[in-house]
Length: 208
Image 1 (cartoon, rainbow, N blue to C red):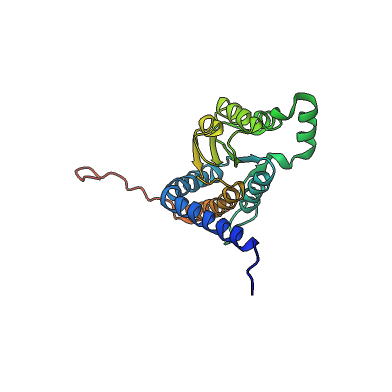
Image 2: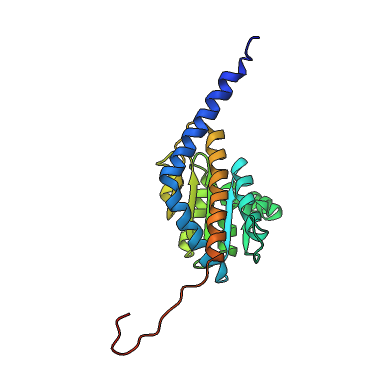
C-alpha cells in the first residue's frame, strides 16, 4: 500500500512542533511560572488583564481571557480579563475613525490602569496595532507581556517582557502559544490556590 504524499508534510509538522515544545520546556517554563504568579497577584488584588492579537492569535488571546473569567480546571473566583478584539463595535468604530493601527491602543487607554497586565500575542511580532498597544500600555503604567514568534522582533522590543517561540511555521508558533496559554492558566490557578505566606512578628532578642 502506497503512503499518502501528505504524510511527509504531516511528519515534518509534528517534528517542528516537538522541537518548539522542547524549546518551550527548556527555556520558557520559568517565565510562564513567573507570569502566572504575578498575574494572580494583580487579578486577586482587583487588577485586570487585557489581551489582544490578530487572526488566530486573537482566538488564542480570547481563549486566555475565557479561562480567567470562567475557569481552567478547578472551581475558583472569576477574574477580570478582557479580549480587546472581541469588542467588535469599538474595534470597527476605532478602525473607521482612527485607522486599524489604533484599534487596541485606544482601548488600552480607555480600560487600562496602572499595574494592570496587557498580554499581546503575535506569530510575527510585527503587527503595528499590537506594537502601538504596547506603547500606549507602557505609557499608562501597565505591564506588557508578549507571546511572539522568533525573536528578536519589534513587539518583543516594545513589551516589558516576552516569550518568543523559535519556529519557522506560523502554525507551529500558534500551537505552541496555545500550550503556553494553558501552562499560564495552570500556574495562575496554582498561585491563587496557594495559602498566603505567614508573617512572624519579631520578638525582642530573637532573630527572624
